[in-house]
Length: 227
Image (tube, rainbow, N blue to C red; front, side, top):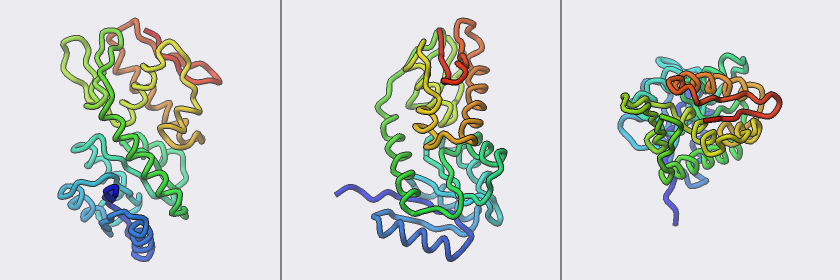
């Protein structure tokens, strides 16, 4: 029998938090519930979780601040934001600080469960990935690091590492925008598309020491890494 997935749920709405907790537990999850950001941070530091489900608006410490602090310690744990916000800037910020997915309230439990499973499976697949050469750079995908020749290692965020990995795997070919958005963001909507553009810009800067490397925007189709 497969092990139960261990989830940290941070939600300050007591009734909603209890409903989500109990619903996940009936589907063979183990769930710790925190009603504020401070308690959630302490639980994250003390336990090994398979994924974090964080409400954005919480007392003491909001979800974005909490995620930033957790990402300083762990670049790989999947993070899903629960939010009532729909502004583009809020969603892009969530992805930019290391969030892997987001759900707008109200949401269905079935959708939350599917997204948790997809992110955990993706993380597990990373462990079997190899070192990749990109011009004068070396990408260590499992460790999420990038190194130029003998320079110091540059740490990549969870999403930067994933995006670069897929670009390299499809080197000199167009990486379909919609396919990669659905694979890494679980949606190809406007918010995710904006977020992807932000990460592409970050990767271009981190690869700037090798002039032979380019990430080209193929309008209407996606991106292509050439080297």
